[in-house]
Every structure is written in C-alpha cells, then in structure tokens.
Image 1 (tube, one colour):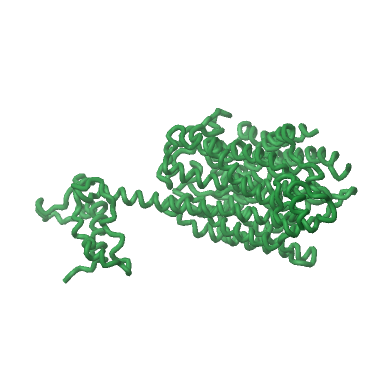
Image 2: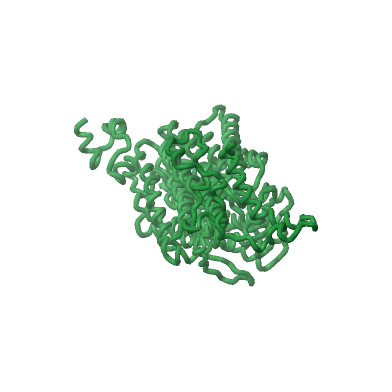
Length: 60
Length: 571
C-alpha cells in the first residue's frame, strides 16, 4: 500500500503535466491541475500515511 | 576666483554626459547661418579612446590629500576612475567601463550581504528547534542544525549547484555568468523541457571559476541550506544522526537542485508561460515553493516514515502535548529568522541597481507586513480558541507569514502582503491541529505546517495576488510584461502555480520518500526506544547539551551510559 500511495502522489503530478500537451483550454488545465493535486494529497495522506498508521508505534 | 571642487566635478560629469548624449541633438538644432568651422562635430566622430581633459575636473592635489579629508569632499574623484592606459590617461571608454563595473559591484555587494543574512538564519532555525524540543535532545538538535550547513554546502558544491544553475544563462545583474550555459533538455509536446544543468560541478568545470558565478553560488547555497534545515525540525528527537547526514546530502545534491532548476534555473516550470501561454510560467520570487515547501514536504515524508515520538500518542490515538524546554530560545530564534528574511526576499533581486532592483524596499516592507499579520493571525486564533495568547504558535505564525510571502514578495502590494500573512497565520494553526490530531504525524516544531503547507499557500498566492505593477527589466521568465495574478486579470498565472504545487507534491515528496526509504533500509532512520527515552544527546552525540541539570533529573531513574556514567559518578 505504501507503493500505491507513492505512485498516486506521482500520478497527481503527471496529470497536470500531461494536460499541458493534451489541451490548450485554460479551464481544462485548471480542473486537471486541481484534480491532480487532490490525487497527490490522497495518495500521501489517504493511502501512504494510513499504511504507516496501521503499524504505528503507539499501537504496539 | 577659484572654482569649488564640487562644482568642478559636476561640470566635468556634465561634460562627459554631453559628449555621450548631447552633441548629436545639439548639432541638429544649430542655425543654418553657422559656418562649417563653427559647426558641432558629427556624432560618428565621438571617440571612446581619446584622452579626456582630466585637469578640468580639478582633482585634489597630493599635498591637500596628505592633510586628511574629514568632510569627505576630496575622496572619490576622477583620480579613482580606473585607467586602462596610464600613458594616455583617462578616456571616455574608461569612464563608461567604470560605470558598468560600479553597477555590477553594487549588485555583488547587495547579493553577498543578503546571502550572509540568510546564512545567519541557520542560527535562528537552530535555536527555534532546540527550544521547542526537550532538554535531553538539545545537543543532538543543535548539532543537526549546525552540521546541515556543512553537509548541504558540500553536496551543493559537488553537484547540486551545477544541476540547479548550470544552464541558467546570463544573469544581467551579476555581470553575465556566461559559463552557466549548459542545460539538459528533452522535447515534450514539441516544446523544450529543461531538466537539469550540466555546467558548474565543483565550481570549476566548464569555465565556472568566475566572479559572478561565485556570488550566485553563495546566494543560492544558503537558500538550499534553509530547505535542508527545515527537515531536521520535523523529525527531531528520534532521528539517527547518520541517517540525517545521508538524507541531507541527497536533498542538497539531487532533490532540491532539480526542482530549483525547473523553477529558477531556466527549466520547464519557469517556461510554462513561454511554451504554453500560462502567465509568466511558474513564479517563485524567493522560494516559498523552492525552499520552504521542498523542506516541509521532505520533512513530511521522513516524519511519516520515522513515526511519532514515544509518548506522543495514547493507545486510543489521542495526542499528548510535549512542550519544548525553552520558549526564550524559540522567540529569540524567530526574531533572528525575521531579520535574516530581509536577505531572503529583498536579496532575491540579485542586485540593487538595474532591472527593477529598486523594488528592494517594497519587497522588504511586504516581508515585514506578512510576518506581522501572520503573528496576529496565529495569536488571535489561539487566544480565541484556547483562551490564552500562545507564545510558540505566535512565533510559528510569524514564520508562517514570512514563508507565505516569500514567493509573492516581489509581485504584490502591501495590502495583499498583509492578507497573505494573515491567512498564513490562521492556516498554520489549523494545519498543526490537523497533522497532530487527524493525520497523526508527529512534528515537534511544526515544520510541516509552517514551511510545507504555507510554502504551498505562498506559491498559490502568487497566482492570486500578483498585481502586475512590478517591472524587472520588462519581462519575467522570458515573457514580457509584469507578473499578474487571477485577481488582477491573468488566470493563466494561477494555473502555472498549481502545476508547480502538483510538482512539489508529486516529484519532491515522491523523490524524498524514495531516497529516505533507501536510507531506512540501509542505515535505519529511527533511533532505538531506549535511546529515545534517555534522550539522544548521549546515545547519538556522546555528550549532554545541559550536563548539570539533565544529569540530576536522570540520576534516580535510568543508569547513565558512556560519558554520562563518568560524570554522574562524580556528582
């Protein structure tokens, strides 16, 4: 799950990057950038951090 | 009647200016009745190599200089202008060269002094972090902040600067920096994407042993060091010293320089405007993203990996406050940081002469205001919510405001600066609560919230608040005109900033996580529970930060090891 979290974080970066080449519409680029940021944050806090919290030291 | 020396100098300067500018215009206005012998010389007869009548400027005589110059009226005269040919004497070419050298010298001095101020911020970071940690970790925390300077500088000298600035090209304010013209570029979507620089390894390769490059290196290095020191706060009180050293080297050699190349080194992020019509590309005047978000997000990656301190969370997940041991250090450190920030933001003009550099006063005031309203925001939030004006959060509010204004400082007016700071002050309080209670990421000093979250806020605020009134040589990132945000008419700028935010979250966090995961596998990031309970000073550093009172506290509890046992036996 940690790998999934990191991959989601990277994917969230690639989405707005790829939008630069696939559309010239600023509205589309804005939406895709915001979506990409949301994907990255979900990957970092929602997946990666949660996987660390499952084995947290205060749960042992 | 003798002409006063000041008037003589003025007349000489006027003569030079007339020679350069006035004669062509004057000759066009001459009455036609003038004889050819009385006509003004044609413009193309202007000579840069003919000797000038220096004695008409009445330079001070040696016997007058020997008497001393208490009023300063004899010091700094035509005699001080460098002459290329002593037999010929002073020429117009010499005078013009002196003007150019003066401009570059002013910019060198400004940039270097600003860099010295930023270097002094290391002391501020060190005592803020140490004050917010417990006394048993004082030596370890101070030593991380002390040696981050050396480890980071070494990594940056070896390869970091080359990756970051190797292809930045000419820096007009610093006289050119012409050797920095090597950039590795890939083609994507039919556009050039600069990825990393290739000139400047060991500050020697490819002609980079250059006076302008040296100034740029020093200034950029102290910014990099700020990013690396941020991480030490997020992982304090449980980070192995060896892991810290290796992690810092990676950050200074690879992660930071790559993102900084993309933002400041002419790389693809900065060219989003020129290549894709997104405003002026990613704009980050002094580094909310490049420095603070990079440091904060790296701190988040390592803090998640290392885990929280023992005793931070109860079995039900509720957090416990672990107060620092010295609030005096914390707030003094905040003042040192605020002082150093006058080098951070205004210094990022890389000069005080030419190309809009006179905005340094405006940038400095924006910086002060944002810090001020940042501390207000945090103070008021804590006072209203918890009934008391919290000292450490007020300090963090000041820092959050300063972090947030770092990117937009060169592009906004004072009202927007105040708003940005106020939002930052409230945001840092909310963020600290979020990471503490919801995400359960232990951050002893609030580095992730101050630098990571507010670094991202600063990046976004450029896209919102840039007012289009700044002018740094008529263009920025290769796009003519002034940087303008959404509220002043350019939504494309906001999109460029959001692409930058996504890059920080995806590339910087991802790369930092992978590098540090490798370090965790090979060396191990976290100290043992026994070391953590005893305090890292003895197990990691072999010496106590406060030997007198810490020893007494432990004397009746745990046996002391190493030097502690020797000292403890004698007290």
